[in-house]
Length: 227
Image (cartoon, rainbow, N blue to C red; front, side):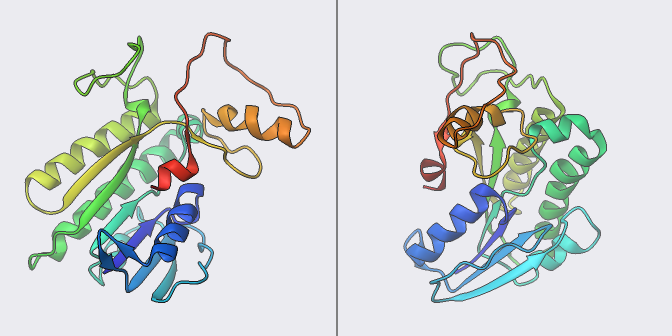
């Protein structure tokens, strides 16, 4: 099996790559090759018995997505994206990466043809929902995103569903909650303070929390996420 991970230099991408390398298999099939792709070169994962390819590329650029699926990976984890706060601050970049990059990947898969139908795991977000929230969000809860990031992810879900319906890929969408604890310095994710209220005190630093005390969150650990 050949596995492609886009956004492999990010927190979730790194942990997923380590997990796959450690297991050496996915759904009972041996992993012979893993391709790690991101806009910057992802780190090499050690202790993997198979072949590992490192690729630095932006999927939204012409021809890059086609190159990424040229070897016809069996399973694609599409994690590449601009985080919520950055997508809100830079409108053009958010749509270029989160929407155009996703569409380019789907189109590259479709254009490959010849029966190629990979499993495509798309990481969406609870940002596709809009307030007010019930205590528990049911499957049929309305999608009314309140940010550009949430809108981009909602459109990505709709595209994934349509390309799957047409038989171009076998799509699976996962709406991730706040994943903690993000290592290193805070990034531009709007939910980054959830990691900060855990990470910064452990490092004897202060954490700025720009939300009211009534804010509710349902976080998940990075270890639970990669499972």
